[in-house]
Amino acid sequence: MRFTLPKPWIAGALVALLLTLLAPTALAAPPDARNIAWLDRITFGADSATLAQYRKLGREGFLQAQLHPGDPALPPAVTTQLASLDAERLTLNDIATQLREQRAKLRALDKGDPQRRALAKAWRKRGHALADQAAQAELLRAIASPAQLREQMTVFWLNHFSVFQRKRQVGWFVADYTNRVIRPHALGSFRDLVMATLTSPAMLQYLDNANNARGHYNENYARELMELHTLGVHAGYTQQDVQALMHILSGLTLDLRPRERARRFGARGPQRINALVAFYPRRHDASPQVFLGHTFAGDDMSEIRRAVDLIVAQPACARFISTELARYFVADTPSPALIDRMSRTFQRTHGDIAAVLHTLFTAPELDAQLGRKFKDPMQFVISAVRLSADGREVVNAEPLVKALRTLGEPLYGRLTPDGWPLQATSWNSSGQMSDRFRLARALGSGRMPLFDPGAKRAPVGTAPPDIAASMLYRESLAPRLRDATRQALAQARNRVEWNTLLLASPDFNFR
Image 1 (tube, rainbow, N blue to C red):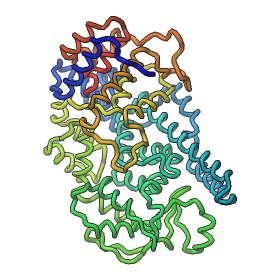
Image 2: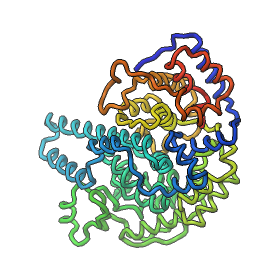
Image 3: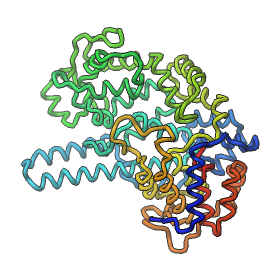
Image 4: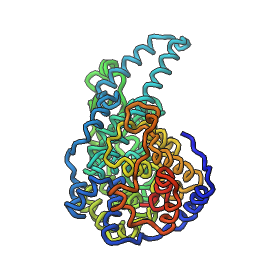
């Protein structure tokens, strides 16, 4: 949907919005509104059900429920829609079978055969479609799941351990990466999360460890595992450590030819990790390596596990992960005192993510930043839908996947392994705000087809949501509005204009 700014007062409101974004102010609101504003950090934005649970449990009770959510049910229509997606139904075994069949078909055709090119193109297209379905599924869960913190952390870790869907067959693997690798560990042990990503087909292919073998080394993953995933850039390790870790990781590969390799390597065949990942001792460099001051020698997965244990135990890892979490949830430049406390919790609990988050969400530094953290596109899109839909079962996430592409932060769409930036300066340009204004208009008009699976447009005559009349708005957002926003809303001549200005306002773009 395209939208221009036909009314001068709307254009003026947008300019005022952009000026306001440059100098956010601390949240001035009654105590209860400040408590509700805290929900905008621990969730993707409050809806009525979240608000009711918070008021029943209180802050600590709600926090504990979010840190240890169990397996809460999704709304029935969302569950049905998820079950209809191929990306959700395919197991890793299914994917392995299909990719091996495809490989056999390609190998049976000459390289110059047009049929071979057409087949390869069709399978690439299939992988991209599965990745889009995986993005839809994650958005549906992020909007509807009562386990809001777990879904926020799933999105956070998908960005931290970023993979790019258009590299080779990575698109085939991203649903498995999200559902089996990231989400189950999102609030658990950081060490287990690292091991899960390390042995995932998506990561092994994206960062090339699938090609890291004795005599044909590739250091991409070894470097990024330390630099981006665990220790950070300035943690004191050396190029020799990168090289040593590369040797330790050699032989851990994506295995699309298990029978051929089993015959080739015989008794020295694979140590199977899952349907597509195996450790091959014959492809591994078992010569002694000195890594982070410790000697490694061996030719099985225990050597890799020991290396991960050593990395995660480094004080630099505790500090790096704590900093990234604080930057995402608290402030672009988080308090050193808060990072120190989070780091101590990380080390004391051996990387218990939930424990570190408890330290974060009970910190006075977080309360001091309420209303001052600019939403990235993912947070903006999901919170806007949660407010405007408020409990209605969103079952069509295709328009939202497209919206995230327009806003520049598509899931699985970051080409480089550093993930999308967390700082406001990357997301508060005039172009970004114009795109957000258009999305606000689409949501505020009710013309985005969120409630009909597969629909390209909403039914004719669909009424815009009445956000102003909702109890959710009156209790959670209205008490926090700035005077400038109230004045702009008072000029709105109809419900669509009112909804648009609210969703595009500084008050809504900050959390």
